[in-house]
Image 1 (cartoon, rainbow, N blue to C red):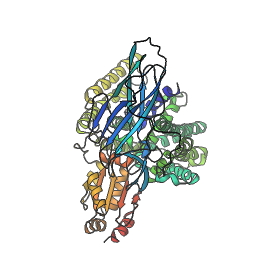
Image 2: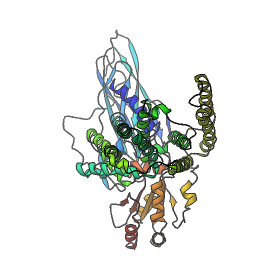
Image 3: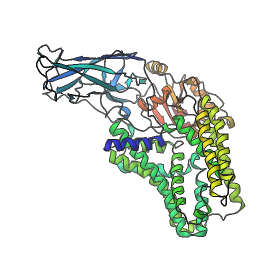
Image 4: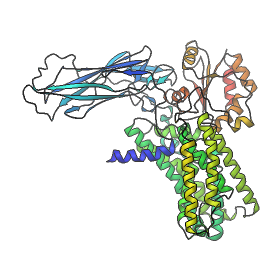
Length: 623
């Protein structure tokens, strides 16, 4: 029952946070013929210990792996980034009951990218699946066949790249025979009487060494920083104007409205914490910061929400009836809670490094501590509004309403439209064109809803007009938004957003596209490598570009010192750099820049915005 409830909660929260499905980023070419799987990196086969088994007996399956040279599976969930270690499960509908799988001893591999020792399986190895036969009573000479399906999950990695191959149906059939002799075993299970030596383990994340109080303080500061994120600016004036209006009419209600806004913020982080718990418990993975903007459905919905909010700022329609403005309806409270939730959603994609660090630390902790840390981020974001409504004098100090407020409101409307267009540019061409047409139709439908009827219109007229508006919006949505749902492929790169149109880059650095083989080759040759992880939807990444990588002195040093400059585009989740960001570099989001120096084993990482002087100093020391 709990797992069913958890799945429902996951569907609600993760759809809001990061879209659905939470799929894999890279798929290897694979083929299957029942008991054998072949991919370009790994082959998997299954073998039974006995040709047939008797009712009530014990036996086992041997799942044999053979990996391409220099590739490995992560062996331990403690040392694998994001819980992407090898998992093998077997299931049968009737009579076959499987015990815990028996994995072989792992060995230590030094990961040059994370500079950590990790436990891995490589080359050829076998995972044994013991089982017993129960609940079947056969007469002499009788037999039955039981189908068994084996599920395999886990990343296959080399020193510079990872893949998540699809493992299509690995299956076998266990023959249960009343007369089975079970005398010729094809293999023997490993001896488990002696405790295997424990492999050396290291923290899965470089953030895991933070003290609890330091990390919680960092989480609180991260929450405070969300209130200055550019993405959230368009929403804040709406709630501030609402608080000012309520303060003029009813001081008590203005306090309740402020608390409702804070509740909406905390509700978003409750969803984050709940999704994190479910993903780790049942799916062996974690949330990656910014994944929501790599999902085209989420981007589409959010862009349409911003357009509707812009129309509200232009007075095309109203959220609430006059009665709720005067305090006679409780619907305004629900709207304020929703506004707080939306503010939290909008703030997270363009968060700075401090937020990414706090969230990364939380995901590397026990679930209770991680949940507390995530909620502390929400408390940090909500605190300024709690202070604002708790101290009446602060509301009195806010500017008095006037014509300036209407001008400001409509100015914010244009800002909302600009952000919506910026988000649309992230989508593929097919989706982008359809969405632009649909935005016009949706705006027309919203105008129908709010402009064709008034508060005094007959109920029948309201129902007819608004039903037509809703039907038109729904039908147009199916027609215009039915472009291929796949994420943008590598060849169809997003067009430059509004930031690049207004502030075009000077292209001083000869950036190479993300190429794991090229990076590995340069590191093997002891050449310096600079990797810039970025995304088209990331405003902070654009700031880093302007403050650091468009500096002429830095560009000249990169060229003079022979530094391999890599632009790792993580705009969509199907890009190789997106997978590498999480699985190889253990980073929860962008922007992040990594410099590999020949004289240092551990790379230098920057998650902030203005690190140009430090980068310049390191480059000057290179030969």
